Image 1 (spheres, rainbow, N blue to C red):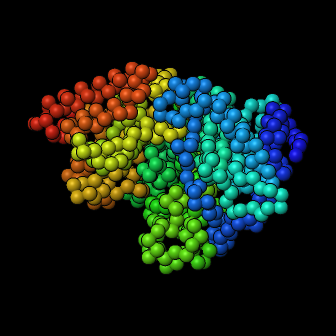
Image 2: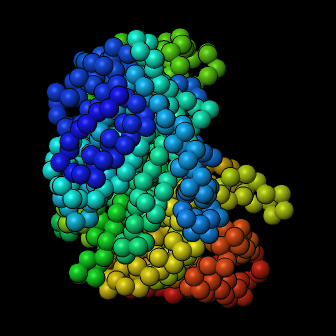
Image 3: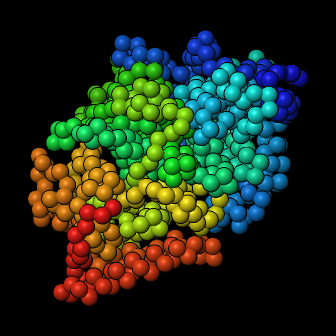
Length: 621
């Protein structure tokens, strides 16, 4: 069918008409983001079985969605960076030739929307009209995607107005890849998992996604645009696109600081972004700007200024509870879409970790009866909630400020049961880049050293950087060198254990105690001691009132054992070796300096395998 549409932007009209001719949709709808449009899409999704309405008294204006069991997570093995050359994509990305990939995708997309509606979804990553924001348009045949994009981005008529008749935009094309014949009934979760492919074309600023209806594969404003494509744009334009939470910290004097926090998966990034401060930190307050992605640009004041390009939260449900993240639990009390969680008998949702005891009966994420004796998870481990950021009770007043907020500190952290201390400040920007680049979490035990193997995830960006990782490190170095006041850089580790395997640090809201020291340290006020890793707080430097944490436990929490630290340092070669031909010399220099500090600490200690001595007391930031 031939559909002629008009959006007011000639380039967009041409692209939509070209896509319509390829995909052969039944109809085309230009999304305006209105409440009426949302109601129509909800009714359509309810009628098809894509959504199930939850009990309006328990969970107002909220819905459950069950995906196809083969379509439950991002598919990294079928995610490609189709740069002009393989060397531009780098060894850490899956690369495919852009011309050949585009030809193969064109064959897949031909007729893929037959019997369906093609939705034109104009969206802004960041506040509409902000100089820090960018506009994209997603063409999709999934009502679930439209409803989710409405939550996760600023979407609709205001974006088209901001785009104007000549504005540029990122092209995001998506199809579930399951065309319908005329008169055929829809299925609740259409997809084509055997042919799923997500291809990024950074040189032409486009993404093509076929076969999956799930989150990061289908909501193309999220990881695809806001990280993989935006990281390339940021490098070319002199800014940063990062897999990073943004939070505000207000001191008892009313001084407000802003912090970016990057952790790999399962390390508590969302919880950290929405901290509830313990009573012992009376007068301190933590506010939320974003839980997942940050865009940061150098300002005229010589500082980095950040926005959260997203408008909502797409959080992992399992493990989220009143204990781990009370602010998230309040945010998802209404106006949310839940994917692959369990359904309670009274029409509410449940997942593992939500309560101490599970309900006696549930309908699990596959739609089957479930009891505690079933032996299978009630919710999928990657079950999600999608909710507007405006519902977050800790929302920072500047979260939607088009000029962004100035960043005072970066916090990076992984999951390490041994060796890595609770917190340290790096010595300078380049040392901070090195510490962030070598960040990782434990995987499996390594027989040779009897130490756990580390899964490296530089800056928590390894799956999301759209170009060569060594060039990405160099870009970080260059950004800091151009700033008059670069953010202070810190490493944290909430997951250190004692010899019996017990966590030494309570985590969750108590992490605010470390955060308060980080902010004061970035301001040049908190005291610290110099070690081979950087500047660390002593027992008396943190507010630990009310915690059952002895000075001996604290010393264990902060201990650096030089022999093990040197083994950890040697393991950095696993990350660096494939990148060596383009690795910035600043990182190699920092590696050399760290090795020298560790050797000096070993010489100063009473034996070769002792903790590093605390060397120099310091209040300088």
